[in-house]
Image (cartoon, rainbow, N blue to C red; front, top):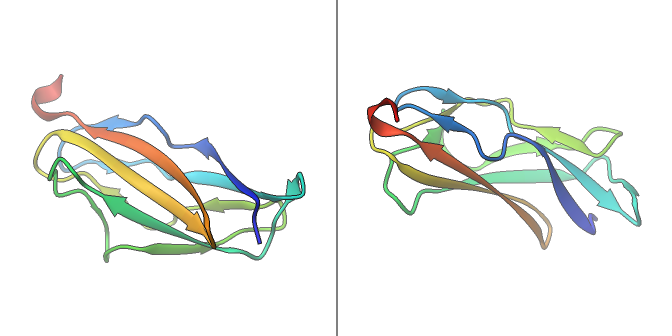
Length: 107
């Protein structure tokens, strides 16, 4: 079981409608060290109604490696409307959040 999930890469990305976001990577830790073999679920929360989602739907489930790392391997595709998208990654009762943005109009 993980004590903490730490975002490594992917937070703060901005893409235009229809584009793919880069992979999201986190590190699961237990007692200060890596927590391998844990299943992490990545869920899309789309309060702005952008239409963003993982190809094939949510959640995307990834197992942490021996270093405690988990990286999404399914494309996260930006929807047709601009706005903020959150991706919540959970392992057991521990959660971490990524905040992403779909930038409409090339801004």
